[in-house]
Image (cartoon, rainbow over all chains, first blue to last red; front, side, top):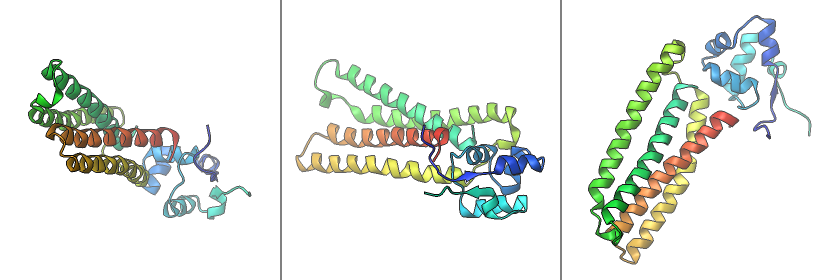
Length: 71
Length: 143
């Protein structure tokens, strides 16, 4: 199946490194756990605002959380 | 499954069942004769009313059951729900527009009230079903 978004992310690794569960991270950025699962799995591209919120929770830059492959 | 997705599923299933029930009742009433002789209005409005009530009841019951499993998720919606709802609405509007044009054409040729009303009814029903399917697919496979 073709993924609906090319945007890749490191949320899972960043979350694991900080010992955060999906539910905890979802609550921190104000989304449902299912939305966080969809973002982690590359099935939903978050809004810019949500992307910044996620980066802020991890204390890193946007590029460290989300990556876009070269053509 | 999030609260809004449950509501989408409830509406989708109830609308599909309601449409089938409506068709069966109309065909029974026609009893092999012309469909235009059927007193369609009360059947249509009762079916629409029953669908609205059933959809609300299913959502509430399902919500209670889901809330017992995951109390934190009750009634929550977020930006993804809004994005998916917006996409579903765009899909629905296309079908409603087609039905609207169909109604205008039927009016232009002075068709029977039965065909005009049913074109609009099926336009709404099919729009709701296709829009619901689009939303469910977006929840399951991604937006």
